[in-house]
Image (tube, rainbow, N blue to C red; front, side):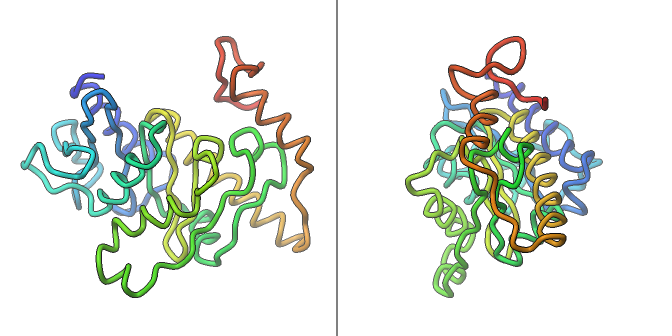
Length: 237
């Protein structure tokens, strides 16, 4: 992908988080990476969304070293680059403080798969990280946030469950590209809302059976996916 197209797609992803009600004020950020060049593009720090253009997007390498010094990058850059280095199949990362997903993060409540809406996009529980230690907070907090996400996904495929709840903080999601990451952010907030209401009505509710979970997930993902017209599906029913 050209740098011009990457900047445009990252801008559109950032604007989409606001348009869909996932971000208020400047509580959020989206980034993308071109794997061939290793360039990362992320929103600038503290710039109002309504003022942002593609030229405001900040370019760094995969280690967060600036390649364009016109604007400061988002303060969460080191979390994004940590995820890009660890999860080599992803092409975009989005962080929000969307209401229900953040409630689950603050209460350290994993989002268990209670229905097929969840199963269509997440093959299992959406986990909560552990809290960072005092040392991690005081020495490289932003990178440590990425490290604790990677730690949480040890032995798991991050593309099968493309979201995490950072304890006491909020959600991070990712995808193969910015379009997929935005969709995952939207679905995460919706399943968090559904889980919160479902567990309010029935606190002891159990996850759906693995057979139902896997059936719905495989309909939309992988080589045997049947949803959609052209391979991998991204929609609903």
